[in-house]
Image 1 (cartoon, one colour):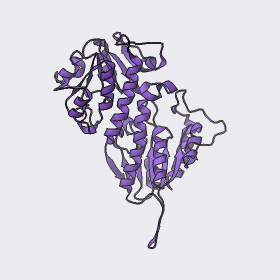
Image 2 (image 1 turned 120 degrees about the horizontal axis):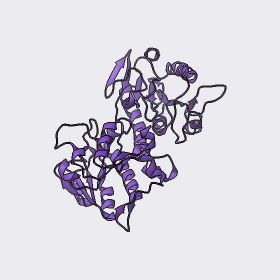
Image 3 (image 1 turned 120 degrees about the vertical axis):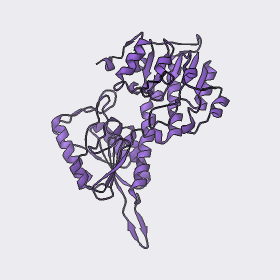
Image 4 (image 1 turned 45 degrees about the horizontal axis):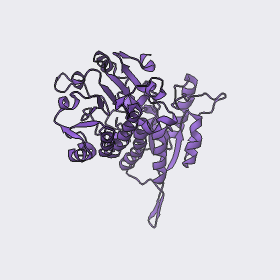
Length: 382
Protein backbone atom coordinates (compact mmCIF):
# COMPACT_ATOMS: atom_id res chain seq x y z
CA UNK A 1 0.00 0.00 0.00
CA UNK A 2 1.22 3.48 -0.86
CA UNK A 3 1.32 6.20 1.81
CA UNK A 4 1.67 9.79 0.63
CA UNK A 5 2.92 12.61 2.88
CA UNK A 6 2.52 16.17 1.62
CA UNK A 7 4.31 19.36 2.55
CA UNK A 8 1.97 21.43 4.71
CA UNK A 9 0.70 24.55 2.97
CA UNK A 10 -1.44 26.17 5.61
CA UNK A 11 -0.11 29.54 6.79
CA UNK A 12 2.07 29.36 9.94
CA UNK A 13 2.27 25.55 9.74
CA UNK A 14 5.80 24.17 10.18
CA UNK A 15 4.97 20.63 11.25
CA UNK A 16 5.06 17.46 9.16
CA UNK A 17 2.99 14.28 9.50
CA UNK A 18 5.82 11.73 9.70
CA UNK A 19 9.23 11.47 11.34
CA UNK A 20 12.13 9.26 10.18
CA UNK A 21 11.30 6.87 13.04
CA UNK A 22 7.65 6.48 12.03
CA UNK A 23 8.68 6.09 8.38
CA UNK A 24 10.82 3.11 9.42
CA UNK A 25 7.86 1.62 11.27
CA UNK A 26 5.52 2.12 8.31
CA UNK A 27 8.01 0.51 5.93
CA UNK A 28 8.44 -2.43 8.30
CA UNK A 29 4.66 -2.91 8.23
CA UNK A 30 4.81 -3.21 4.48
CA UNK A 31 3.86 0.31 3.36
CA UNK A 32 5.60 2.21 0.57
CA UNK A 33 6.09 5.75 1.85
CA UNK A 34 6.30 8.68 -0.59
CA UNK A 35 7.13 12.12 0.83
CA UNK A 36 6.98 15.40 -1.05
CA UNK A 37 10.38 17.10 -1.21
CA UNK A 38 11.16 19.46 1.69
CA UNK A 39 8.01 18.35 3.55
CA UNK A 40 9.92 18.23 6.84
CA UNK A 41 12.44 21.00 6.32
CA UNK A 42 10.74 23.49 8.68
CA UNK A 43 10.64 20.81 11.37
CA UNK A 44 14.36 20.16 11.05
CA UNK A 45 14.00 16.99 8.95
CA UNK A 46 15.57 16.98 5.50
CA UNK A 47 14.89 14.66 2.56
CA UNK A 48 18.02 12.62 3.27
CA UNK A 49 16.76 11.73 6.76
CA UNK A 50 13.60 10.33 5.17
CA UNK A 51 15.52 8.46 2.45
CA UNK A 52 17.69 6.77 5.07
CA UNK A 53 14.50 5.69 6.88
CA UNK A 54 13.20 4.01 3.71
CA UNK A 55 10.98 6.67 2.13
CA UNK A 56 10.93 7.79 -1.49
CA UNK A 57 11.08 11.53 -2.16
CA UNK A 58 8.70 13.02 -4.74
CA UNK A 59 8.89 16.32 -6.61
CA UNK A 60 5.37 17.68 -6.15
CA UNK A 61 1.80 17.09 -4.94
CA UNK A 62 0.76 15.11 -8.00
CA UNK A 63 3.62 12.63 -7.70
CA UNK A 64 3.00 12.24 -3.97
CA UNK A 65 -0.71 11.49 -4.09
CA UNK A 66 -0.68 9.59 -7.40
CA UNK A 67 -2.28 6.21 -6.68
CA UNK A 68 -1.73 6.72 -2.93
CA UNK A 69 -3.98 4.59 -0.72
CA UNK A 70 -3.39 6.71 2.40
CA UNK A 71 -2.60 10.42 2.73
CA UNK A 72 -1.16 11.64 6.03
CA UNK A 73 -1.55 15.31 6.92
CA UNK A 74 -1.28 17.78 9.76
CA UNK A 75 -3.91 20.26 8.50
CA UNK A 76 -6.07 20.68 5.39
CA UNK A 77 -4.41 22.64 2.61
CA UNK A 78 -5.80 26.09 1.82
CA UNK A 79 -8.17 26.42 -1.12
CA UNK A 80 -6.55 27.02 -4.49
CA UNK A 81 -7.66 27.38 -8.10
CA UNK A 82 -4.43 25.81 -9.33
CA UNK A 83 -5.00 22.28 -10.63
CA UNK A 84 -1.38 21.41 -9.83
CA UNK A 85 -1.82 22.49 -6.21
CA UNK A 86 -5.34 21.17 -5.56
CA UNK A 87 -4.62 17.95 -3.69
CA UNK A 88 -8.30 16.98 -3.31
CA UNK A 89 -8.72 16.92 -7.09
CA UNK A 90 -5.57 14.82 -7.44
CA UNK A 91 -6.50 12.26 -4.79
CA UNK A 92 -7.21 8.72 -5.89
CA UNK A 93 -10.89 7.74 -5.61
CA UNK A 94 -11.48 5.73 -2.46
CA UNK A 95 -8.26 6.93 -0.77
CA UNK A 96 -7.93 7.34 2.99
CA UNK A 97 -7.01 10.76 4.47
CA UNK A 98 -5.88 11.10 8.08
CA UNK A 99 -5.06 14.35 9.88
CA UNK A 100 -6.37 17.19 12.02
CA UNK A 101 -8.97 18.28 9.48
CA UNK A 102 -10.96 20.83 11.55
CA UNK A 103 -14.33 19.29 10.60
CA UNK A 104 -16.41 22.03 12.24
CA UNK A 105 -14.85 24.64 9.96
CA UNK A 106 -14.35 22.75 6.69
CA UNK A 107 -17.72 21.58 5.43
CA UNK A 108 -16.77 22.31 1.80
CA UNK A 109 -13.71 20.07 2.09
CA UNK A 110 -15.81 17.12 3.22
CA UNK A 111 -18.31 17.72 0.44
CA UNK A 112 -15.39 17.33 -1.98
CA UNK A 113 -14.30 14.17 -0.18
CA UNK A 114 -17.74 12.61 -0.56
CA UNK A 115 -17.66 13.26 -4.33
CA UNK A 116 -14.44 11.25 -4.59
CA UNK A 117 -15.48 8.58 -2.09
CA UNK A 118 -12.64 9.59 0.24
CA UNK A 119 -12.62 8.02 3.69
CA UNK A 120 -11.41 10.71 6.09
CA UNK A 121 -10.44 10.70 9.75
CA UNK A 122 -10.09 13.86 11.85
CA UNK A 123 -8.05 12.98 14.90
CA UNK A 124 -9.20 15.95 16.99
CA UNK A 125 -12.38 13.92 17.55
CA UNK A 126 -10.67 10.95 19.19
CA UNK A 127 -12.50 9.92 22.39
CA UNK A 128 -10.75 10.52 25.69
CA UNK A 129 -10.46 6.87 26.67
CA UNK A 130 -7.44 4.92 27.85
CA UNK A 131 -7.10 2.95 24.61
CA UNK A 132 -6.88 6.16 22.57
CA UNK A 133 -4.24 7.93 24.67
CA UNK A 134 -1.33 6.96 22.41
CA UNK A 135 -3.19 8.51 19.45
CA UNK A 136 -4.41 11.65 21.22
CA UNK A 137 -3.13 14.45 19.00
CA UNK A 138 -4.84 17.17 21.04
CA UNK A 139 -3.01 16.14 24.20
CA UNK A 140 0.42 15.79 22.61
CA UNK A 141 0.17 19.11 20.82
CA UNK A 142 -1.53 21.00 23.66
CA UNK A 143 1.22 19.93 26.03
CA UNK A 144 3.75 21.72 23.87
CA UNK A 145 1.44 24.73 23.50
CA UNK A 146 1.24 25.20 27.26
CA UNK A 147 5.02 25.05 27.59
CA UNK A 148 5.72 27.45 24.73
CA UNK A 149 3.08 29.92 25.94
CA UNK A 150 5.02 30.43 29.17
CA UNK A 151 8.34 30.74 27.32
CA UNK A 152 6.87 33.42 25.03
CA UNK A 153 5.34 35.21 28.01
CA UNK A 154 8.67 35.20 29.85
CA UNK A 155 10.43 36.60 26.77
CA UNK A 156 7.94 39.43 26.28
CA UNK A 157 7.56 40.22 29.98
CA UNK A 158 11.00 41.76 30.40
CA UNK A 159 11.22 40.91 34.11
CA UNK A 160 12.28 37.80 36.00
CA UNK A 161 9.82 35.06 36.95
CA UNK A 162 11.31 33.92 40.30
CA UNK A 163 11.99 36.02 43.37
CA UNK A 164 15.65 37.08 43.29
CA UNK A 165 17.44 38.49 46.32
CA UNK A 166 20.67 40.37 45.68
CA UNK A 167 22.84 42.88 47.51
CA UNK A 168 21.30 45.53 45.29
CA UNK A 169 17.75 44.63 46.23
CA UNK A 170 15.00 42.07 45.68
CA UNK A 171 13.11 41.28 42.47
CA UNK A 172 9.53 40.17 43.14
CA UNK A 173 8.23 36.93 41.56
CA UNK A 174 5.86 37.11 38.61
CA UNK A 175 2.21 36.36 39.28
CA UNK A 176 0.71 34.08 36.63
CA UNK A 177 -2.96 33.29 36.09
CA UNK A 178 -3.82 30.32 33.88
CA UNK A 179 -7.42 30.17 32.68
CA UNK A 180 -8.34 26.59 31.80
CA UNK A 181 -6.74 23.54 33.42
CA UNK A 182 -6.75 21.18 30.46
CA UNK A 183 -3.57 19.66 29.05
CA UNK A 184 -2.20 23.01 27.82
CA UNK A 185 -3.17 24.79 31.02
CA UNK A 186 -1.59 22.22 33.31
CA UNK A 187 1.65 22.26 31.32
CA UNK A 188 1.64 26.06 31.51
CA UNK A 189 1.24 25.79 35.29
CA UNK A 190 4.11 23.31 35.58
CA UNK A 191 6.40 25.42 33.39
CA UNK A 192 5.60 28.68 35.18
CA UNK A 193 6.18 27.01 38.57
CA UNK A 194 9.53 25.65 37.38
CA UNK A 195 10.50 29.21 36.46
CA UNK A 196 9.60 30.36 39.96
CA UNK A 197 6.32 32.21 39.41
CA UNK A 198 3.38 32.39 41.80
CA UNK A 199 0.62 30.61 39.87
CA UNK A 200 -3.16 30.67 40.15
CA UNK A 201 -5.61 28.73 37.98
CA UNK A 202 -9.24 29.21 37.07
CA UNK A 203 -11.34 26.39 35.58
CA UNK A 204 -15.07 25.75 35.40
CA UNK A 205 -14.49 22.06 36.13
CA UNK A 206 -14.18 21.42 39.85
CA UNK A 207 -12.54 18.08 39.02
CA UNK A 208 -9.44 20.04 37.92
CA UNK A 209 -8.79 21.37 41.43
CA UNK A 210 -6.82 18.37 42.64
CA UNK A 211 -4.54 18.37 39.56
CA UNK A 212 -3.90 22.10 39.88
CA UNK A 213 -3.05 21.94 43.56
CA UNK A 214 -0.78 18.93 43.03
CA UNK A 215 1.37 21.21 40.85
CA UNK A 216 1.64 23.78 43.62
CA UNK A 217 -0.79 26.34 42.17
CA UNK A 218 -3.82 27.96 43.78
CA UNK A 219 -7.22 26.97 42.38
CA UNK A 220 -9.80 29.72 41.89
CA UNK A 221 -13.42 28.77 41.41
CA UNK A 222 -16.87 30.29 41.23
CA UNK A 223 -18.81 29.47 44.38
CA UNK A 224 -22.43 28.56 43.68
CA UNK A 225 -25.18 27.13 45.85
CA UNK A 226 -25.61 24.19 43.49
CA UNK A 227 -22.35 23.47 41.68
CA UNK A 228 -22.95 23.05 37.95
CA UNK A 229 -21.45 20.08 36.19
CA UNK A 230 -19.51 21.84 33.44
CA UNK A 231 -17.51 18.84 32.23
CA UNK A 232 -18.58 16.63 29.33
CA UNK A 233 -18.26 12.86 29.35
CA UNK A 234 -15.20 13.31 27.16
CA UNK A 235 -13.48 15.44 29.79
CA UNK A 236 -13.93 18.78 28.01
CA UNK A 237 -15.44 21.96 29.42
CA UNK A 238 -18.95 22.80 28.31
CA UNK A 239 -20.85 26.07 28.12
CA UNK A 240 -22.10 27.53 31.39
CA UNK A 241 -25.37 29.24 32.31
CA UNK A 242 -25.78 33.03 32.10
CA UNK A 243 -25.74 33.29 35.91
CA UNK A 244 -22.53 31.32 36.15
CA UNK A 245 -20.91 33.40 33.37
CA UNK A 246 -21.70 36.61 35.29
CA UNK A 247 -20.09 35.31 38.49
CA UNK A 248 -17.17 33.97 36.45
CA UNK A 249 -16.58 37.37 34.81
CA UNK A 250 -16.67 39.12 38.21
CA UNK A 251 -14.17 36.67 39.69
CA UNK A 252 -11.76 36.93 36.74
CA UNK A 253 -12.01 40.72 36.78
CA UNK A 254 -11.10 40.82 40.47
CA UNK A 255 -8.26 38.30 40.12
CA UNK A 256 -6.70 39.69 36.95
CA UNK A 257 -5.86 43.04 38.59
CA UNK A 258 -3.12 41.36 40.62
CA UNK A 259 -1.57 39.33 37.76
CA UNK A 260 1.50 40.00 35.61
CA UNK A 261 0.94 37.15 33.16
CA UNK A 262 -2.37 35.66 32.01
CA UNK A 263 -2.48 32.53 29.85
CA UNK A 264 -5.91 31.63 28.48
CA UNK A 265 -6.69 28.16 27.16
CA UNK A 266 -10.50 27.96 27.30
CA UNK A 267 -11.97 26.20 24.26
CA UNK A 268 -15.36 24.58 23.63
CA UNK A 269 -15.18 22.00 20.79
CA UNK A 270 -17.02 23.18 17.69
CA UNK A 271 -17.80 26.65 19.05
CA UNK A 272 -16.21 30.08 19.19
CA UNK A 273 -13.91 30.50 22.18
CA UNK A 274 -15.66 32.11 25.18
CA UNK A 275 -14.73 35.76 25.76
CA UNK A 276 -13.34 35.86 29.28
CA UNK A 277 -11.23 39.05 29.25
CA UNK A 278 -12.74 42.35 28.14
CA UNK A 279 -11.26 45.81 27.61
CA UNK A 280 -12.15 46.96 31.14
CA UNK A 281 -10.23 44.05 32.64
CA UNK A 282 -7.20 44.95 30.52
CA UNK A 283 -7.25 48.50 31.89
CA UNK A 284 -7.06 47.14 35.43
CA UNK A 285 -3.85 45.20 34.73
CA UNK A 286 -0.46 46.71 35.52
CA UNK A 287 1.64 48.28 32.78
CA UNK A 288 3.93 45.68 31.17
CA UNK A 289 1.65 42.72 31.83
CA UNK A 290 1.27 39.95 29.25
CA UNK A 291 -1.70 37.94 27.97
CA UNK A 292 -1.06 34.80 25.93
CA UNK A 293 -4.29 33.76 24.22
CA UNK A 294 -4.05 30.08 23.28
CA UNK A 295 -7.66 30.22 22.07
CA UNK A 296 -6.80 32.76 19.34
CA UNK A 297 -7.41 30.14 16.65
CA UNK A 298 -11.11 30.08 17.63
CA UNK A 299 -11.56 33.82 18.10
CA UNK A 300 -9.68 34.19 21.37
CA UNK A 301 -10.60 34.36 25.05
CA UNK A 302 -9.58 38.02 25.09
CA UNK A 303 -11.87 40.46 23.29
CA UNK A 304 -8.90 42.38 21.84
CA UNK A 305 -6.82 39.45 20.59
CA UNK A 306 -5.63 39.78 16.99
CA UNK A 307 -4.82 36.40 15.37
CA UNK A 308 -1.10 35.86 14.69
CA UNK A 309 -0.08 39.25 16.07
CA UNK A 310 1.30 40.74 19.27
CA UNK A 311 -0.72 43.85 20.07
CA UNK A 312 -0.58 46.32 22.95
CA UNK A 313 -3.43 48.00 24.81
CA UNK A 314 -2.88 50.29 27.81
CA UNK A 315 0.61 48.87 28.22
CA UNK A 316 -0.59 45.23 28.19
CA UNK A 317 0.76 42.98 25.43
CA UNK A 318 -1.61 40.39 23.94
CA UNK A 319 0.01 37.46 22.12
CA UNK A 320 -2.38 35.89 19.61
CA UNK A 321 -0.47 33.17 17.79
CA UNK A 322 -2.95 30.66 16.32
CA UNK A 323 -0.67 27.65 15.96
CA UNK A 324 1.38 27.20 19.08
CA UNK A 325 2.57 23.61 18.47
CA UNK A 326 4.09 24.83 15.22
CA UNK A 327 6.32 27.14 17.26
CA UNK A 328 8.10 23.98 18.44
CA UNK A 329 7.90 22.16 15.08
CA UNK A 330 10.53 19.47 15.63
CA UNK A 331 9.12 17.97 18.83
CA UNK A 332 5.53 18.67 17.75
CA UNK A 333 6.10 16.72 14.52
CA UNK A 334 7.72 13.79 16.32
CA UNK A 335 4.84 13.45 18.78
CA UNK A 336 2.18 13.95 16.11
CA UNK A 337 3.84 11.41 13.82
CA UNK A 338 3.81 8.86 16.64
CA UNK A 339 0.10 9.54 17.26
CA UNK A 340 -0.59 8.95 13.55
CA UNK A 341 1.42 5.74 13.48
CA UNK A 342 -0.50 4.35 16.45
CA UNK A 343 -3.79 5.21 14.76
CA UNK A 344 -2.76 3.55 11.49
CA UNK A 345 -1.68 0.47 13.42
CA UNK A 346 -5.22 0.26 14.83
CA UNK A 347 -6.65 0.29 11.29
CA UNK A 348 -4.12 -2.03 9.67
CA UNK A 349 -4.47 -5.80 9.43
CA UNK A 350 -0.86 -7.07 9.38
CA UNK A 351 -1.74 -10.58 8.20
CA UNK A 352 -3.89 -9.47 5.26
CA UNK A 353 -1.83 -6.28 4.72
CA UNK A 354 -4.89 -4.10 4.28
CA UNK A 355 -6.92 -1.46 6.11
CA UNK A 356 -9.76 -2.85 8.21
CA UNK A 357 -12.46 -0.38 9.28
CA UNK A 358 -14.21 -1.78 12.31
CA UNK A 359 -17.17 0.54 12.83
CA UNK A 360 -17.92 -1.09 16.17
CA UNK A 361 -14.66 0.36 17.49
CA UNK A 362 -15.34 3.53 19.51
CA UNK A 363 -12.12 5.14 18.34
CA UNK A 364 -12.84 4.64 14.65
CA UNK A 365 -16.50 5.61 15.03
CA UNK A 366 -15.68 8.85 16.85
CA UNK A 367 -13.26 10.38 14.35
CA UNK A 368 -14.32 9.06 10.94
CA UNK A 369 -15.94 11.90 8.98
CA UNK A 370 -16.62 10.64 5.45
CA UNK A 371 -16.99 7.14 4.05
CA UNK A 372 -18.86 5.50 1.18
CA UNK A 373 -19.48 8.90 -0.48
CA UNK A 374 -21.23 10.52 2.49
CA UNK A 375 -20.60 12.24 5.81
CA UNK A 376 -21.23 9.64 8.50
CA UNK A 377 -19.97 11.28 11.70
CA UNK A 378 -23.02 11.91 13.91
CA UNK A 379 -21.48 14.83 15.82
CA UNK A 380 -20.56 16.65 12.60
CA UNK A 381 -23.94 15.92 10.99
CA UNK A 382 -25.60 17.81 13.85
